[in-house]
Image (tube, rainbow, N blue to C red; front, top):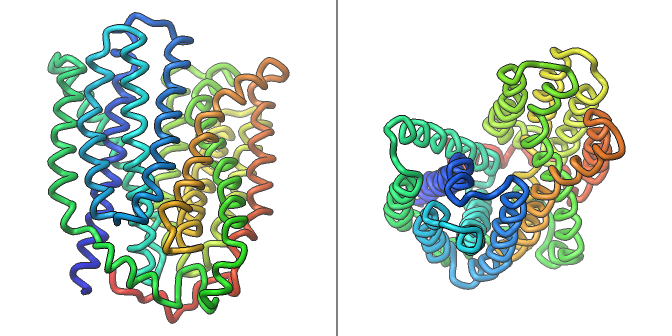
Length: 405
């Protein structure tokens, strides 16, 4: 059992890396596809909404399906479909075909995202200690791999469609090869029968089900706020240094790099802190740290202050989303997929809305002052962290040992 559980954990890492790599492969080829289809930035922005719409729908479909059929069926099937549809944007020749390609690819990516997170919840429950943040960290590793592959392919003069097809084909092989190591539905159901969970140490099954729906939607609203902050940082961090502080373009690019590096580092370390202090403390203090960081960005007149601020912002946000996903899955493990799909879906809406909301605010105030909205969202999240509170606000030390590393 111990060996099979470790295998399931490794397989979950593989699928998170795979998801990050497939999405990253598309992202790094956006400029080439935009040039091939011959569309403006504005048109591309509209088409990217379809990617998000497809992902949202895929999440809502895959969540309940994972609860019904099991992750061993839905996760690899989603991985295969995601790998197979990755090439479609590279083959598009006009805005209409690109729109359809992004809708389909987004749907498949959303299915993979939610199903692998639902499986991660079952693995975490079986381990009896926090492991969710580590999974999310490996998603970022996938993005780095995609960037390296794209750089090498571009240097070799490969066509974007050829690169996307190759990455997708490798992804299909990996998705199929890793399927056997996933937890079967019976094992997941057995892990759900335990009365001890990471979030609910002493709660009875009846008490755990009371108010589950309302709690899950509250978690979803918190995910929307946190992921809106992430989305804003992705698109506006470099522009802030360049437009507000007058940094050269090369220097400004390090703003996002600082944010991303801090977030990845935080996720690699977060599980240890969750085991020691509890997920409520990580969400509350993480959101508060992010609020301090983005306030420093918004009000600091010095470049060094901006870099420190973006680092604190990334570090603070790093552990928030994994705790929200984990709490949603553990709220009712029998419906982990459906609950994670609600939290992830609304969070994804926030991720897409973040850049647009900040852009709209810049018509009213300067860019750095628009970031004050992010301060308010982080502060609200810190207050709302009590949504993670159950009978016990932290994980007892007796449960920390788990199965092993």
